[in-house]
Image (cartoon, rainbow, N blue to C red; front, side, top):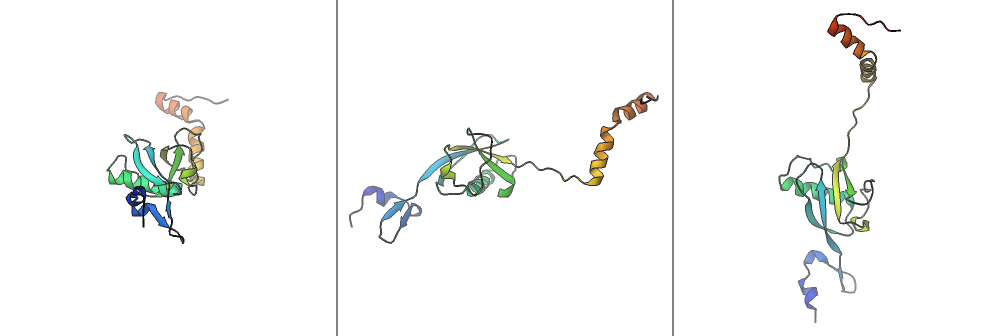
Length: 147
């Protein structure tokens, strides 16, 4: 029945009993998530086995709860999480956050590319070809002959 002081002080969420009634402590750490366009980082504690998608979800919820601007929404699939100083590749959403070396991250919205329809591609092609000639003809009221 003798427990050490540190075991008594652990919060219930951090305690996990296995079959042998031993206490296993989950590793937790503080991270900072910077959101592009926002004033400063969001800081919160995560478990090392939390997924990157879970971290993004928590960051979006805290961001909204704090009333920060710009408004981001809550769809986790529309965002990417990058390590702040470890390359240019976004982290895999199923990766565990504890596997990343850093504790500072950058949260960015995914770039949305409008779908290119046939009508839109024709319109863009027409704008690119000869548009300066049409503008010049219209502006100065004279014709430029193409070779």
